[in-house]
Picture 1 (cartoon, rainbow, N blue to C red):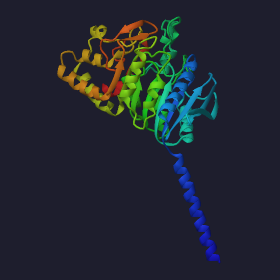
Picture 2 (cartoon, rainbow, N blue to C red; picture 1 turned 120 degrees about the horizontal axis):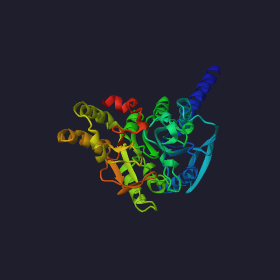
Picture 3 (cartoon, one colour; picture 1 turned 180 degrees about the vertical axis):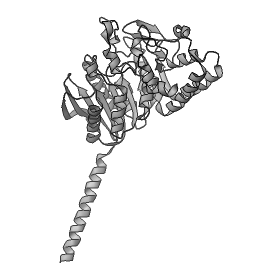
Length: 387
């Protein structure tokens, strides 16, 4: 009798463990897409529209093993994390957590937020969409340096169409790119893609900083209109098991070429090729010195004076000069780094208006800039590894 009871007990424990294991395995979905929308001062209404457009894409595409988690700041002090779910073509938003004064500009704070997402929706693969204002690689402390208030950011212009650092309009709500990279790494994650729905984020300096935490970066080298990404049309490709980056660029172009403000630029960076790009760039810098007189001949990608963001491919063309062999070798690698890109004939800058595009590689650099905002450029990982 005692032996029988022992057998029953062992069998029960085994069945309990098996059920718990099966339940745990079922909770690990195939993919989680994290829409991260921190406080950005004047973009909240656009964020709600972005979320609604993503829900439309969900209805069209379905989820099929994918979960969509959203972090949204509804004010400067309040945020919430919720899940977008789909049931019989009806989308609902299920609140997972409320936040008071989340420290999303710090490594510890952003690490915790990403960990919350990971805990609520564990997955085999992760992707991240970041919506806010953007200023490329420039560190937050540069945005604080406003000597004489002579410098004016693109978001400070009034009575012009709005465009979309990484964060809000003042330093206390802005996040350094290195903070994002460390926070993702602290959670042991490697993103399938990071999409920046922000201005000026398709920068070689930004991509290089993120190369160890994502396969691909999707971003705009210029300003993007405040409407942001057309999720109702590109969402189905973002939700796909194998994201179609070429289709994302094509849908982006089709939307913005007919938009009320028909200006848009977008590119996809293959971050796995960036070490090769850095290697050839180091050889180019060892061989060539940039002639400052050529600066005016490089495609500008912003409206600032002096220019902060230049077309990267066009800059290297000017740097190499008559060394066509070196430039051709560089171009072959750059084509692998930027496998997909698109642009309208012109782009828009709130500070300068409409600017024509005659040379476009899909990614920018600030290397030749003399703008005071680039004073810390030599501290970037990209500069250190290419000089």
